[in-house]
Image (cartoon, rainbow, N blue to C red; front, side, top):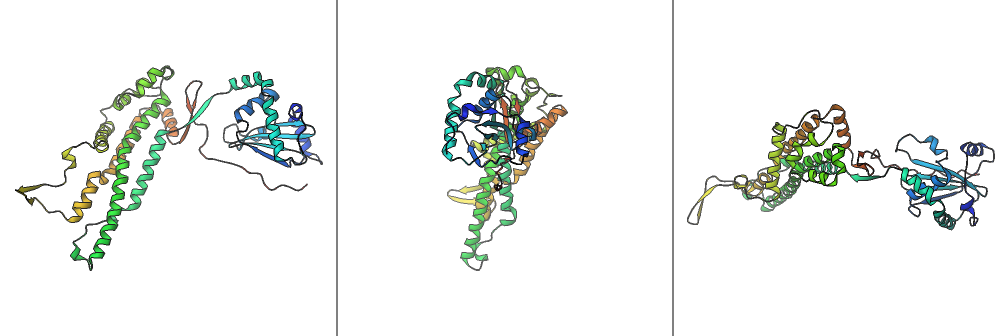
Length: 390
């Protein structure tokens, strides 16, 4: 069975009252055809087409949705042609169509898509008017949330290794029943410490970046409109050295009740942390920080100032060089810095910033550049239940 050749042309919007009367009648329509559309017709194009041709959404689902973006069905049109009712619904991941009457084959959907696209030019002006009235947004990943989540994940892995309890000073080979036992324990501890030091290196490198990402997010969120609108000024501010960006936050952004005092202890400790990170990340040769032993030579004869065990020489040096014991202190430095900067904001802005920081997905309105939270972050979908027999 195919759709009538003029099916799309004959489509007309139903009044909600008429639809409800039919659905509540004894011979209520059964929707035996259920189709799903991905991007065969882009949802934005289809929405503008339906709105431009038939007016605002008129389906029952529009009365059931909440006045927010967290609905399973965002819009619905109820249309009729040739004795059939067509419900067109905008979901989170697809467009769904429910057609009453005898079940239609899949190729009828292809026919419907072709028919709708063929009428785009007819309603092009109306579609353009609808599209122009829509706010244009993009979604983007919150870089601060992304880095913070990565740090928390790595920290959790490090804690799971339980380095302090799972590794300890190994005695000499002679202190074990067999050399194999000593070798097995050595290998076990080597695996734990090697993994822990690698993870620790990653976290210590990322912690200052996490704070910087927070500052950048704050700038984008609260930057004065005049600065945000000027591409060159905005890019110049973002490219400033991190200390300049921090000191000038209250001058370039709205919502601050006090200036940032860069001599504050939290800022001073963060500045020191950045320097530590640079030495670590760039492999700077800072002998005072890298040294681990002191000895003398008489010609080619080494004379140790103090003995270190084989374990200390292999694993103790590795742990110390990457700063495993400093990890929690350095994270606290970053947390204290973020909390201090946030405390300089007006109380209402503090709460707003905390909400934005806690979201992975953010939105930006391309019309004026302001940021927003478009969805809750919880992905939701729905599927129809079993078909009810006639």
